[in-house]
Image (cartoon, rainbow, N blue to C red; front, side, top):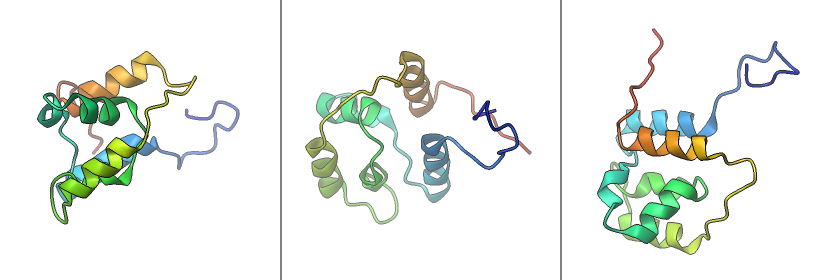
Length: 104
């Protein structure tokens, strides 16, 4: 359960996971491997804030130049609760190395 103190709450989702799954449906998911040779952008996509602009890098309605400029303008500031495991899972998900769990 997401909230141990409130086990009856069943409607919460992980925001990043949800956004990534919606982006996959639309066709604008972030594929980190495309940015491996652009370290500033790669680091911000991996460790920076979740910005709507990252879903404008490719796909329908893409504005890659503006999206990159916006992402690069926001500083990376890791939070105390951002665990290394969370970062690792994010990298693996984006690099398509983690098997996606799909519920029927």
